[in-house]
Amino acid sequence: MSGSTKVSAAVIGVGRMGQHHARNYAALAGFKLAAVVDQNPVSARAAAEKYGCSAFATVPELLAAGLGIQAASVAVPTVFHRGVAEKLLPAGV
Image 1: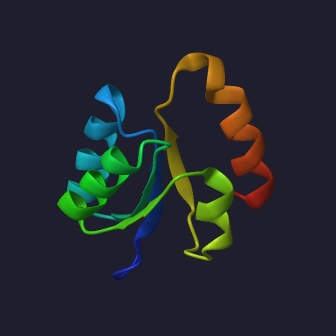
Image 2: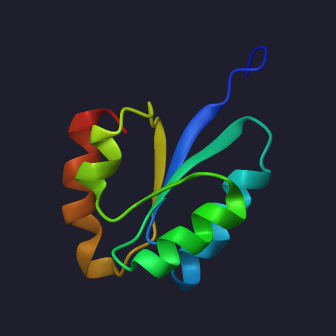
């Protein structure tokens, strides 16, 4: 990565696995954890406060916020991966 440009990342699902993804994005040089998404507002808010990012309940809300998300970890139950990806990919994430 050149200069101070950081990849703007989001974590979709901040349960058991998503917490690890959020922690790692927040700590990795070259990345900025911009947002977390979780249908549980308590979980989303707690992760957002812990890592200093925005919280959303849905992927469409995240995308509508215009944060310029470039990468995302999909950490929801496997049966929901495709539905999440089908929202992220057309948005260039």
